Length: 181
Image (cartoon, rainbow, N blue to C red; front, side, top):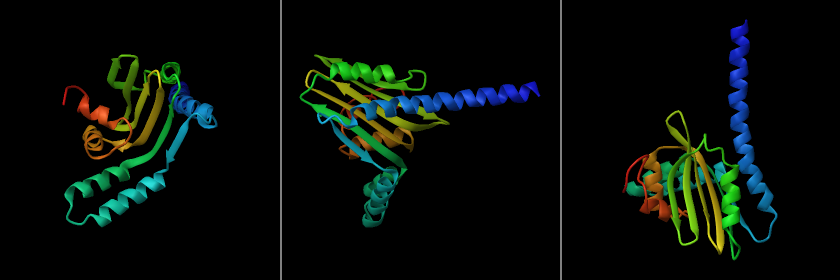
């Protein structure tokens, strides 16, 4: 009987920690959603499914477009919060302080001339469940969160074949969990 209570307690703790992290990221988005200095973009899972289906069906014979359509269908949503013409470094530091570093693995960290950029992932059961990009400098700030169930190869394809904000920088950096392009 005690073992059952211990197992339930552990499972409850893991579930609560997971929700707490999602809430922290959502709180950060929510805090600035009504601020007119920020541009906000949310692409729902249904929109991603529609876009992937459109690409797959309209690209008969185009293998790259077929693969990209399959990949886009794996993305369950994208949230982007960005602002130009503001001091982005304090926002970068605030965003990074909300993330639970135990749940995110750093893929890339770029620090140069007053600019900070990080790509981080949250992995579960061998699949990437979230790709997070946070960047700030003296004139701008961007936070991108992409949810789904994809592999490192999928991320590489996204970097090569799309123009999602920040993916050009991902494409110039690491091409997988360890190691250069």
